[in-house]
Image (cartoon, rainbow, N blue to C red; front, side, top):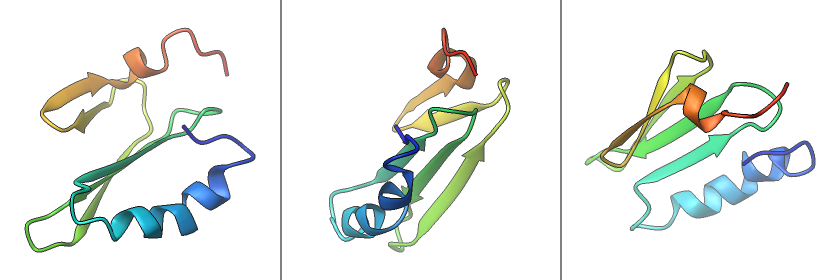
Length: 78
């Protein structure tokens, strides 16, 4: 979960470190102050695909699960 104080680090240096882990298949960042979820998924070619979810009716796939954005942000007031 990204907060104002951690977002810059989580989206840069920390993310690059995680991407070097061979076992990591997804890196998901959930913004805490707006509907915005960035999901990076490793491909078989070892590239990273980015999926952006910014609408309350969007869904995000984490592993084999698909989760509605409105469920992730349930009870969050912006």
